[in-house]
Length: 81
Image (cartoon, rainbow, N blue to C red; front, top):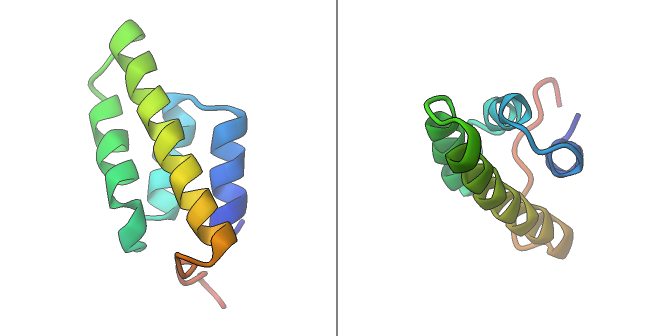
């Protein structure tokens, strides 16, 4: 799954485990640093605070996706590519 597909998959089902998997998939991509920080914080949150964090993560994922689609961001290196 490439970065764009991973971002879309998270946005389709934004939950803590999916955020963790997305952050792991994009760990070597500098533009995803804010998303990775949110994923690290999500581990310690529950309920209402987690919901707010997931909203922030969705906003960051939409920003990254828009950057990929507009060409502002260079996609991360795909393993095996």
